Image (cartoon, rainbow, N blue to C red):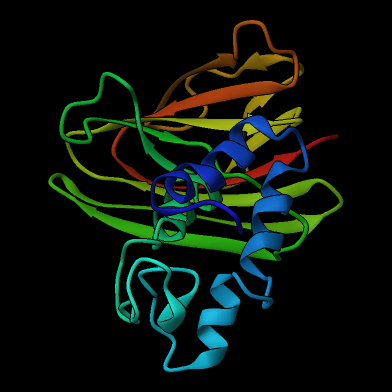
Length: 206
């Protein structure tokens, strides 16, 4: 890790959003590093708190830096916004428009997170099934709508009912799923729009 207070906040999202197919893996590798300077090094020194500086007590800012400081804690929002994929739309007001776009990685068997919002709890969890197939469960609170993004997927089912296949959205297949399609300018990314509720999807590349 060579970023500081400002740069660390943007490092993990930038790697995931612009680092190509392996960007999320690079971000995870940074998190799994235990050589100084790193989060793993902080953890190994005990008691597992975040430091004000990567240098810890040997901070070059002053003779002794804080060993209990949130300033470098920017990896935590990334767990929600990218690994779990819980985000607000750019024009969302108070979480009335949600985007689920999890960054999948084979380094993990699955991942899940929940977030308390002004409208209620938003949650997302995914789990690999086989090859490129995976399950995705999301919860959307009352007063919100959500778009769910699937990448490199050809068929999407919700509780056994097909909602997207052969390049087309299947209307009226499931109550609460009222729209879907391909992302403009992309042949391998599709989206499904859902109303409030809990949904259990199975995404298949076949």
